[in-house]
Image (cartoon, rainbow, N blue to C red; front, side):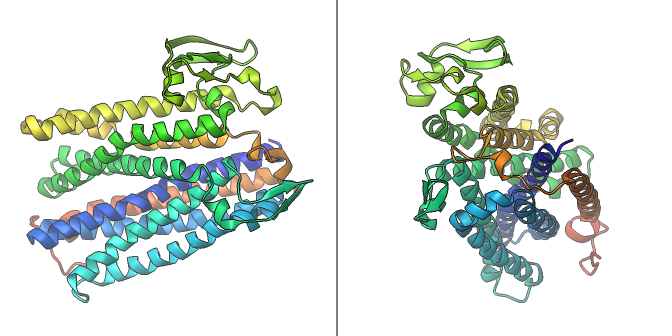
Length: 447
């Protein structure tokens, strides 16, 4: 493994790991705050226990995300010094603001965890809600920084120099809104399905059924918001990509020839050497309509761009197809659940529905990781689109593969530790969190 590949692999592994925890940090506090609100309105002690259980999960995942996020910030400087040398002064503002949001989130978590019976009940609830708001702000600010890499703004690039820097314009670049919106909705979808799947599994095992049923319903509601919102925000993001990065759109669809009335491709195997796609299902003129709301509009193909500026077409295309596939599956599951909630309430307790959500537990995160792959790999070979190539930004320091191995081991260890702590919290539900369980003792302390 050469140093350039090792540096890219380390960033891919780190981002792929961190993105899960950042999305949980954006969404899970809202589930917690909603359960807390239900407790305050109904005085149902089960909701209080659920709020406390979820708050401990939020704390564990927040700590894990803080570690992985800190490691990522160091990696940017260590692995890509040329990039940070020029880009840091331009897009540093969203990172600085993200740090502020992070500290607000940390303070709010502390207030919420230790504020039971000490604060005014609605101030205490607001602290939990603030955890979600600050986590959401953190995610949006980081995505704004990433969007700048896809749509550079806020500076003039003259003779290799970055002049007339405007950090505000850089942060609010042309891509930030569509990327942040789609990412936020995808986070709600992924986290909602993951949490619903865990509680569906516990219901199927006939453990603390009332407790987990209440949790399942809240999580499923959030999952539906994300599942139905994702196609709408995805359409906005795709139109933005078509305007700013037509070569990325062409790679997503493995679209080689420029044509009017371009077909939307489902499946298929791209062949970059022969510049064609095989075994694909093509829906005539749909791609043109999705790009510009005009069935006869022209869509540029990969052949219109220099070959050395093509991203890895197969990787981008398969990732895009994976995202769409799992997105459609989650919409179908959400539609069935919505139908059951309004017209077939007896379905809500059926084992087949719970098993469906159990199977779908990872679907949101698979789609999310695939979408992130489209965003990042589709920008290649540029680290700053159209300005700086990724190969020109990598560190000259040798031995990066050892850093990759070390960081992989750290992230693997974090995963094991996090899984142990979360499973331990689940096992403690009867004793600590479910007041309907005979084992419940509010004087118990979770160590």
